Image 1 (tube, helix red, strand yellow):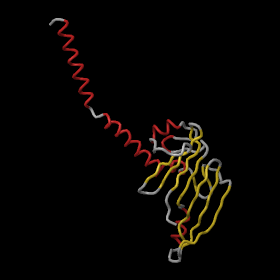
Image 2 (tube, one colour; image 1 turned 45 degrees about the horizontal axis):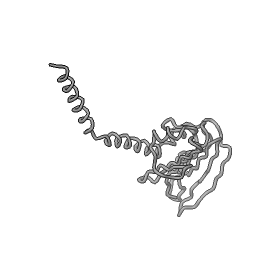
Image 3 (cartoon, rainbow, N blue to C red; image 1 turned 30 degrees about the vertical axis):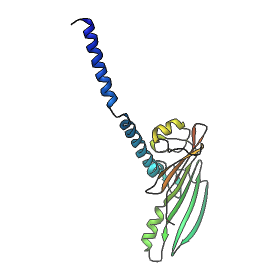
Length: 190
């Protein structure tokens, strides 16, 4: 086979390969990556604070440190009484709601409820506290968006990742191009 025919055959193979690659739906790959980021962001909203809270024994300590300040009040919600507390640690604030104390609740159930508070809000402002997905205060914004995606146009300083089903959200705030605060809010019917 002469060289000119080999060259034409090689060009035909390259052209065929290129046209085959061109027909692969690239948006499907982009959609899969976006879907993975969306799923990761949803898990971050739902469970992201659990990495931080794993080392806490509320209301007394977190990572073996007592709170610096405690605000506590009782709230009446219908026939129930709710124990509401805000615990401030260095670089972290936690809002807790202990289960309702109802006249019909047995004493043992009330005691068990007081051992397991509902965390309704957690704010972290220092890198001292670990966070899910390996994020920490100080992480570059580009790294956060590569991991969780960009939830869309928002205030330049803060963006909100929300789970419509649970009504929970995580607000990430930036100074310049670095993460400076994360605030999780869980919906709690008071």
